[in-house]
Image 1: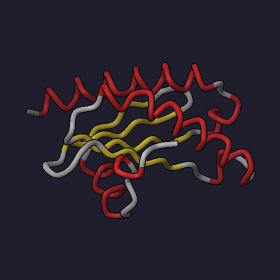
Image 2 (image 1 turned 135 degrees about the vertical axis):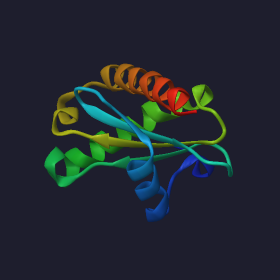
Image 3 (image 1 turned 180 degrees about the vertical axis):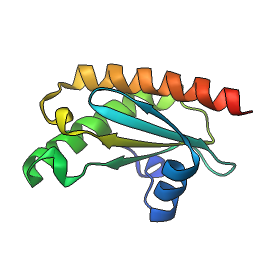
Image 4 (image 1 turned 120 degrees about the vertical axis):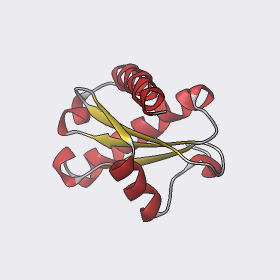
Length: 116
């Protein structure tokens, strides 16, 4: 489970991260990232109906929360991350999702550093 202090809960945070942040697409997920000035790192998940049934979406969300918790120490305090699951994430194993998340985060860090 992702600790409450690291969860993105407000719709405005999700929207700002997706609209104004950088994006790194992977085969099973898309990682959106943005830097803000307040609070510690926050992570949000978007698992749409295209992923599958409610049971399949919840399974994907649990896997993504688990791998997001593993990457928390690698995040900077001002980062906001939104992980959007693609339909292929339904059949992906956790290790593959974690590898793609780490790859996506590396790419978003490179893109954010270029923007500075």
